[in-house]
Image 1 (cartoon, rainbow, N blue to C red):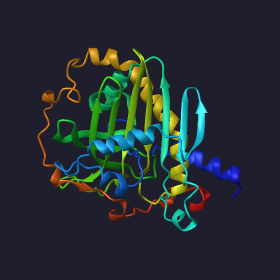
Image 2 (image 1 turned 90 degrees about the horizontal axis):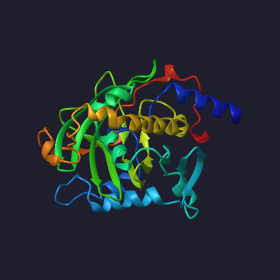
Image 3 (image 1 turned 135 degrees about the vertical axis):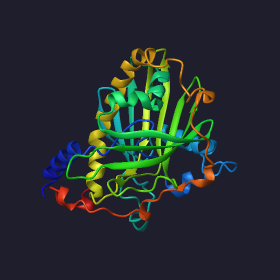
Image 4 (image 1 turned 180 degrees about the vertical axis):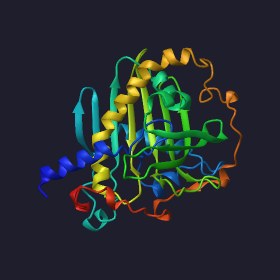
Length: 312
């Protein structure tokens, strides 16, 4: 297959297979590795709940330019993919994850950071702007700034639809808003036979105000939609779809103030934990969801491109 044909096929498949989603629940992910960041960045007192070191490392990577290759820079939107450090040996390169880590940043000139943060949290509002969503709900509270929830979304036939169960944690201040989440196992929400369970090692959003009604909106992403889609297709799809997804969220932010004014305007449990109606859950009941523990679902009938893991 010619290089140009490969890119055309990958882009075509990406447009038809909306595997990525953005919001409080998603299959985006970021950071070094589940062993290096998630395990080391968990609160000693709360077990699986992220601590300050995990938030700090996530923010560091959001702002870093080292070992990132720019793939897109247009209309106040930039997309990067992580590349191996020059010091990485040939043997170590073979052990790097085959699903790319991706970073996107959007400069928003007409919506405040606080509003964009609310859009990511507000599951009721998401129903009005996310056409691919099948089902989304919060399961339980884990702490004043952490919960566990479920999200499923539609994939074009013949691909099977996807779902994910994630632990989400957040921080908010005048200077920045941060949300991070990663896949977990919940005893009452095991993988379903009619859906493919995707894996988010860590999804993250960093929103920083640049003015009263402007902000920078950044996310880091490394996620595996599972099934049997070639990893190079997943990588290309993420680069093509990421700007489109962010623009959809920006548009949702533009409409959110008017919608919220008519829909429980003072109800924001992500800012005021006392408003939450979720039941509490012991974080010890959860464990990290690893991709290798999930069944690989055969979706070979959906492929109209040649598998080539090395093409990415």
